[in-house]
Amino acid sequence: MDTDHDAIPPDAPDEDRRFFLKQSMFIAGLSMAPADFLQTAQALEDAPTGNAVKVRLSLTINGKRRRISIDPRMTLLDLLRENLGLTGTKKGCDFGQCGACTVHIDGRRTLSCLTFAVMQHGAKVTTIEGLSEGEKLHPLQEAFIKHDGFQCGYCTPGQVMSGVACIREGHAGSAEEVREYMSGNLCRCGAYPNIVDAILEVKKEGSKV
Amino acid sequence: MKPFPYLRPKTVAEAIGMAADDPGARYIAGGTNLIDLMKRGIASPTKLIDINHLPLKKIEHRYDRLRIGALALNSDVAIHKAVVTRQPLLAQALLAGASGQLRNMATIGGNLLQRTRCSYFYDLALPCNKRKPGTGCGAEGGINRTHAIFFAGNGFGGIEKSSCLAVHPSDMCVALTAVDTVVVVNGRDGERRIQMKDFLRLSTQQPELDTNLGPGELVTAIEVLDNAFAKHSHYLKVRDRASYAFALVSVAAALQMDGGRIWDARMALGGVAHKPWRYWAIDLMLRGQVPSEKLFREVAEHEMESAKATEQNAFKIKLTSNAIVAALKTAAGIS
Image (cartoon, rainbow over all chains, first blue to last red; front, side, top):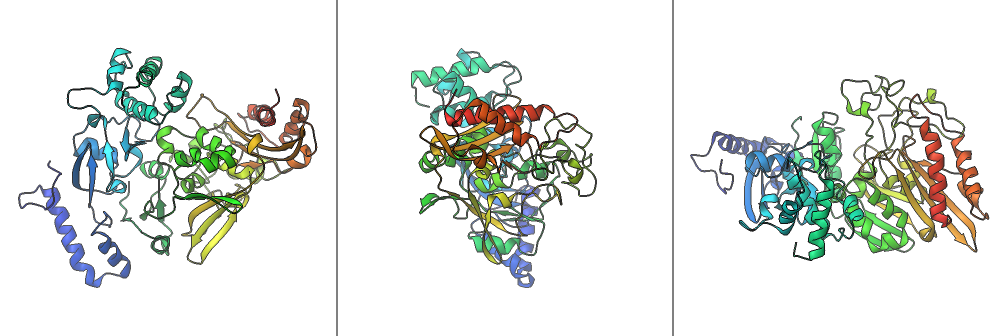
């Protein structure tokens, strides 16, 4: 489904037409609405608020501006995976305990499973897909391969996103510091020693992360 | 998850207005606790008020206090120069909590309002007086290894008075309970200032209430009053794994020392009660004394006399005692 659109074309999928109809009915009903709802409707102009089944938002993902209409209950993780097809970001526990869903929001590492996508209206999101430059892997991705920083690989996108942030934050000074600042990323295969080695090497080499 | 209207106020007044007359409305900031609870069906807001765009992020030192906006991120507060130099105990406690990712999302206000991680609170199939008042406490006679050992004040250790054995999960709140802190809240009737010691509640009555916030009230800031503890304070956290776990027991210890003697002392304990447990008598017991392991052991055992273990957590009494001694030794700089 193409979610990168400004206006709803006549041949839009049903889902979008339903949203459009609901919005129209919502606005048409405003003359009878109490003040509370009027306020909500005015806010729709610039922010994705409201009690509609779907709200519209705009955010930049891996450098590309996206305009999307979604259910306000949708997490950023589900938006990335289910709506945008960016399945590099993994759903591990979905409760903020494992770190597999780590992405960068406005330059900070965060858990995409514990934030509603609507809350990120206007934000810049970087996922594992946005870390490499085309076929050229990020230095930490290269280091993970060199040091065998994974077995099954499921936690790896989260580990890499968190590891890059760990180096950028200046928390990769020693193995002990890396272990402490990477503690939010679990690896059930137990590749921890190799992950620590990969991060320390990139930090030591001083490559641009 | 039940559907909810999503609102985005631009001012504190607008936010408070949106919450007025709707007891089911909830403010959301970092969302790291509330979204978890919503996914599990433990919280079902009738209205979600996203306060992230309110101007409440400032961290500043003014006159005699450090004022931290409710929306300041845990990660930013922990490394802020004024916090590190004036209130290192707070910085240490913040860095002991959660993970790098969560500290980048979680706010100071949200940290204050964290709900317990008691497994009975989280399991909808089991009784819990906090989640569903009147259903009973699953932890009483159940799996209570991580639960409370202090209940209703010195000398009233018996659990028969409590209807909830859960402990408060926050590290930050333990540090803020040890030193003088004010929680600034706003509601329909204007601003209110609540001492940290009165902000969180014990579970003797209405364990469904974690705080003394009024309906629709919004935490806007905390103020940590200047103190002379910066050189001799230590936050010690003991947990089942080395990092990224809630405390089994934690100790926030703060000493004021001069000429080899202790002149003032504060302490709060985490992981042992429904709210961080302030050790009120410690300043009287340590004032004028020369620090020693023997002295600290006496002080620790004195407070633990009013602790009461349940079936599975007797180890916590010895553990807390040892943690108090260790934290005081580090704070005092003795080996």
